[in-house]
Length: 115
Image (cartoon, rainbow, N blue to C red; front, side, top):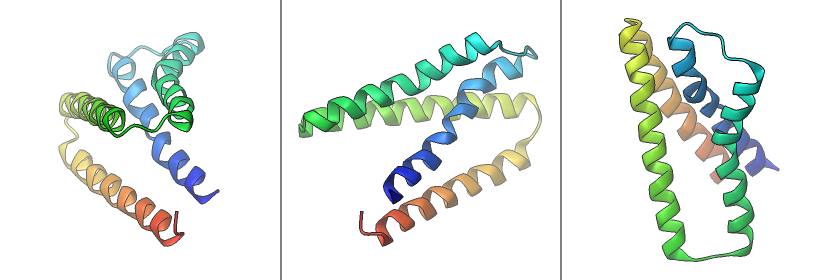
């Protein structure tokens, strides 16, 4: 249960990266487009969970982790561009630090729980 809560907290922040580009343009996305973006953002995670439950392969694991790292890097670069246009350099720096610390705290809780 603790692992599920940890993953839920960790993945909840992905929505900011998905919604940031439309918000930066000043348009308010419709519920349909938000649902589609949610499917794009969450669909691969769900499919990967189903695949990973039945298939264990080190090569595939490394490939998918590399793909995930590239995706995270892309989202961070996009968010930094939005923050740069909004002239929020100091706030962005603090929030990156807070995000890193929350990530380490989540990992510490999961590790302490023995998962």
